[in-house]
Amino acid sequence: MKSMSVMWVGCGDIGIRAGSALHDDGWRIAAVRRNVDSLPATFEGRAADYTRPDSLAFAAALAPDFVVTTCNPFDRSVEGYRAGFETAAANLLQGLGAHRPRHIIMASSTRVFAEREGGWVDEHSPLTRDDEWAQAIIAAEERLRASGHSVSVVRFAGIYGIPGGRLIARISRGEICPPQPVRYTNRIHREDCSGFIVHLLHKAARGESLEPVYIGVDDAPAPRHEVETWLARKLGVPVARRRRAGRTRAPQQCRAQALPQPGPARQRMTSLSIPIIGAVTALCSGSG
Image (cartoon, rainbow, N blue to C red; front, side):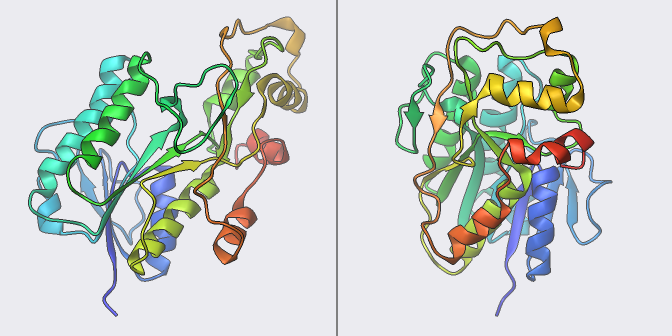
């Protein structure tokens, strides 16, 4: 059987983990990022800045069977988000030209949802129209889906388990979310992120259809104050000393309706899943 190939645009921690698993299954991995020095030797590294015009002009010649994008904002400004998402999507489509990969998977964010009062959302919930940063992500989703390519979007919640992550750094400074108003945190471990994308690619490679939208979350939203206070105690941080002002609105609670139902696929996801508090030892050690 012909080996499958994937071009991974923005190949960071998640891409390396997923790509390594795919390589073990016989896939060929073309990894696109600005600096390719830290990529595994088994990957074909392509040094490119996907925010720049014509940066992905080689994509058509690569002719990958699948494309995955795990892009990041160029910086934290609105323009940085537009460059990292909407412009990157446009550059990808330009680079692919007439080549039609079997499927494109875009890593998106649950930030795109309109709900901000702590209610539940799923894959069909309304999207925000008043968050300019989220609008940049939504524009990238819409550009890819309007292209005529076969596309799935995975809206990931907050990814944890990555050494040096912002969550532990902030808590280490004593910056804890206040108890009121209640704000929920939706999280997913990096192993689940990579595992879920691998699952979708294998499913598509078998000729099975994919949903247009997925939510990547551990299905266990928790009050943010409780999680952060517990983590602070484990880190030995005096939480009463400093309080984070926080927002007046409480972000949504995410429910992943389109994830695999009970069976081998769902069991695989469940075996990877690491609940937020249960992963505190890994988070505190930085080995996540």
